[in-house]
Length: 350
Image (cartoon, rainbow, N blue to C red; front, side, top):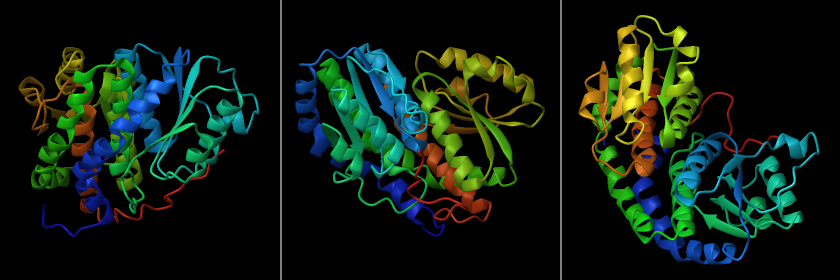
């Protein structure tokens, strides 16, 4: 670890290997039993309700369940329940509520309505006694311990792990489930880059705007990293898929404009590299998170992902490096990482 003063945020970033290990040990058989029950139901799609970082985890789930289980995923619109009072019909759905605290009123409302309609419901939460857990048929606990930092880190990766564990058991792929055991060590390797990231983040102390690019599984990483930049460093960071960015927003890029690119090796790499080459030619300053030497060679600031994982698992390592970057940029800007202005740990929305 570096010599920078510690914070709750810093401690929780470094707690992630143990949190992920504990979750796997404690929830493996429980998730398998949940899936055995779910197989008795005619599930044709999944609806996920979440807000904030949990919503970014849900975005990962959207890709994951489609590519591995073959089920389409819809992200719920909670205001349809709480403001418009027009909940949709949910026949043949599995409804999943994701909330660190389990106390987000609108997320609970979605799960309660699904239970009223008689479809199976699942809570992914850090608090097994929360209103969300009480409303759901099944609960996967995050086992993250108290998260004292307002910005979510360990609960985010625990949510990713919960979704990955659920998908692995739903598809019945032992190899896929076993692959999850590689994640804690891979995250630890990323954390060993602490001092390097502290140095490179300093360069962006005066950055006020940027865009963040990701695609496929790491579309969620782009959203989560942009959220961390906004809530911790007050940088106006806009996330895009590499495809969407070319449909208009690329016009904002001028000489020296910072563009963060998450591009681990995988199916989408060539397409992201082609966009990155175009951005470099437009004068963008590229900050690239990748395990591909070709991608890293395009960057003004290359951040090498120190270990390679299957593409569907790369959001774990990519986001941890992003968390470290956001933490050190916060310190460089002389802000308090544990007390972002105007934010509280539990946000009540309708």
